[in-house]
Image (cartoon, rainbow, N blue to C red; front, side, top):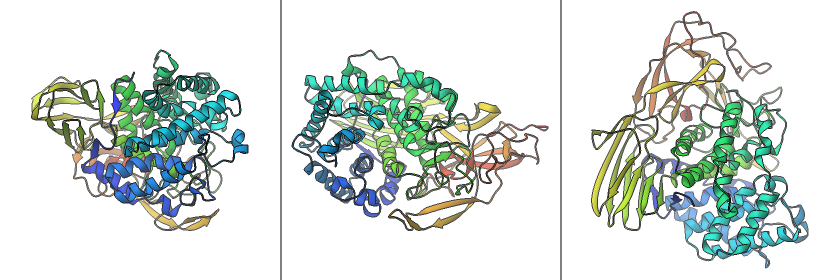
Length: 605
């Protein structure tokens, strides 16, 4: 049984910079895909002739909680229109995907698993009591087809078998019928065992394989947490063992992994797919909810505050397929792609760079992050993520006012009609913790809320420090935020049509051509943090909410042969080419072109 469970969009409402971030998402690509992108606008899921597999369920999985968190009636109506069309097309035996009966055996049932999860999200947001029976019929039919041998798991479904458990756990709690556990066992038996893939992660071969596919792996991390109860198995912290291996051989400074599309080793100029960013966040949300272990929430913050905004334009009208930790340009490479199996446009910003899965799937990142701010337990509430929002839960209202992670201070305004245990998670990097102005031990704050009104203020320091990375490189971190050397650039707008998909401003492609030097190393380990106001765009390039002054020197870094727009994995030389310069570093998520992992450069290199 999970230690914590998630609240719904009825109970958590975003405030402050978080609400603005969600509004930007609604104003941008997420809130307009159904108007401008054929694979959603004209999908076979709603009777059209375009893609009828993962893209509409992916998009709805994030669009639905976005609409309900913002209480936007137009977006809610749009979500309902899609859900109604999907539900009304459900066949008599329960099958729901846009696939003819005679073709089911050849249809990759990843779409079945995904639409069941999406319908569960819709029920949790809307409270529509007709939906549980729809999910029941979808998965009962899935069970009967698998149990009879008419279909079997293959392709993506085989490597994502555990995704079904989000909806299966919901059904078990609601109906408790034996077939649900039988389906759980079939899924695991037919699904891929990732423990057999570990050796292939240690030395990436840059060959497209599902067992080294970064998105599959990001999803896999939650597999034991979501499945072991229904399977009647003991929890073993499988995710931690897998994560340690992945981090050692493919880790990034933001606590994710390289994967463009497959695991790509330790190299800050390799890519990480956007789908993997949001799926790793979702895995960590479930891992924290199940285990209550702070390490998962802290890692979640690192990805959510850094990798997610970094791979989106600040207005969220364009995204990358893959981001690079050291990203000196976002231009089409003319010789070959600098990635494992992605194309030469995978790192440019656009509507559908490289492939459309991320166009649909990135939408879940911010809304589900927001829904993880507070979680409930047995007569207990925990603030898992210090995000500005209001929680209303059965006689308890908690208003959290904060600019975290940009400033390390939070105010909790609590009105309660009953007694409840209240916990505030304090990150491990916090220093000089003060609670209501008094010094306190650096650990989670736990208190008993009694009926009436109360307030708690929390503040701490998060000093800037260099985090050691492989190959003699370092990344600057302060709290959950990574900091990068920003590179100014010229933005080139590219409009065109390809395979029936129009790229028209503002939903077109953008290429970023560097205009300022990027070949630096740190020359000092003393840093000065400056806190600024949060503007209309929380992750603004021009007006970042926090900056760090650092002394740096130019070095001969060099380019990765044969590319003219990709830097080497490590510097060609660490000998300084200039006296120290004071440079303002900004949050990783604000810098679209950046250097993040750099060496320490002494007087003589």
